[in-house]
Length: 116
Length: 118
Image: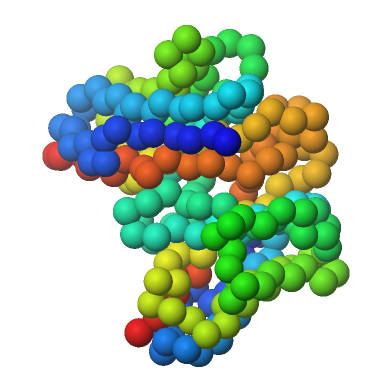
């Protein structure tokens, strides 16, 4: 079975400051890794994912995450946050499979609050 | 592509009543997932379908819960004899069976149905 740990339940950050949201996972087999974002009163949206290849993955809105196999981590970073980044962020894993579609196991989420 | 839709968005019911939620996935997606999200927690997997076949059910899905996808399109999730502990956001997601390159495991989520059991 897989598990995901997000150590920080809430992270307040001043606008234009950098941020890192931490994610660690546990699995006995290879996994895919994801970050989802949930804006207030909206559903989950995929922010970025690691499937294979380069361990650094980027989103279109300036977030990046780095897969670190030795530390079983997939931390999310942004060098300069904006008010619009206020949301809940979920790290998730799924099994690697030939079919490419497996259930997601989520962490408990990190609420990112941007302070003007 | 109108995305995944769920109905209703909100449901308030009294303990002991039955409720049914509907999910309409993205039209060409074969796989459909149900998750439950309680306050302060991440979503937890409940069950998923490949077309009309229910392939896996979580231990969270007690015998009061039943999910169907009769024609491989929309799905329903029914909770019988609701309990206050059933209060949660119920999320539906869909994904293509044969994803395009770079799309592996990408599940598209609906807005959810928030259930409150009084």
